[in-house]
Length: 350
Image 1: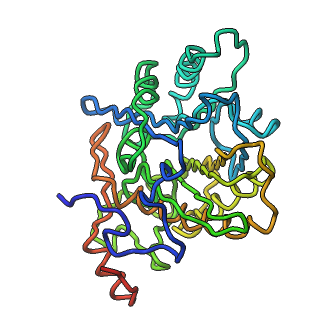
Image 2 (image 1 turned 45 degrees about the horizontal axis):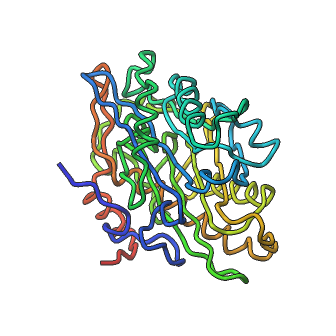
C-alpha cells in the first residue's frame, strides 16, 4: 500500500508564490486545527474537523466573507455571516446529517468559554459534505463529545490530511479524497500577508493535475460508473480561508469567490447536486486601517494557488477506503499518475 504524500513530496509544485513554513492553514498565526476521526465496524467512515482562531478568545467576532458557488448544502450560520460579515465561533466541518448535532455541540463549547457567562445569542458556523457513499450517514454517528474533542485537540503544526476528521468518508474527482491544506505568502504594499486554506473535498469532475486529466481508468483504478452517470455525483466542497491581512467583510467576500473559482483548476464540474461553499476570515487587528483594494490582487493569486494545492493534497494524502456495503474509493496511484504526467512532459521537481 502506498504511503500518502503531499504535492511537493511528489514533485508537483503549484504556482510560483512562496508558501508559509508549514504550507498549511496553521501558518496564519493563531489558527489551529483539530480532528476527530470515526472508523467503526464496516459502516462508519465519518468525523469532525475544527478550525479554531485563537483571536476569538479575546474578541467576540472576526471579519468574514462567504461565497456560495452552489447552494445545495446545509451550512449552519450562513445567513448571519452574509448579513453581518463576521464569524463568532470556530468553524466546524462534518457530514451532512451530523451538521445539526455538531452545531449544538459548538454552542456548548462556546457558552463554556470564559467571558461568555451571560451570552444569550451565538451564531455557530458548521458546514458539511455528504459522506454517504462510504459511511452509514443515516446513523448520524457524530456526537457532542466528538465535536468537543476536535475543538479541544486543535493545535498548530501541519494538520493531518486525507481520510481524517470530516474527510474520513469523502471522495472527489473519481478518487478517495478528504482534508487538504496549503498556504501562500503574498507581498502587498503593507508587507507580507499570509493566506492559509483548509478544504473538505467531496465533489465530482475529472481530476486535473498541472493541466493533465487523470481519469481513474487511465491509472488502473476500478470504477462502477454507469454510462452517462458518474459514480459519485456532486456532494460538495467546503473551503475555509484564513488570513492575517487586514481585510474587511466585503473584501473577504471577494477572496472567498476566488476560492470557489480555484476548484476549476483541479477539474470540478460544479454539479448541480453539489454544495460548494467558501468562507474567508481575517485574524488581523480591526483597529488598523483596512487594506487598499490594490493589495487584493496578490491575495487573490495566493488564494487560487493555495486552494488548488490544498485540493490536490486532499487527494494525494488519502488512502484507499472500504466502507458501508463494501463500497470502495481508491486513492490516486502516485506512481501511475506521475508516469502519466511525465508522458505529458510535465516538469516534476525533485
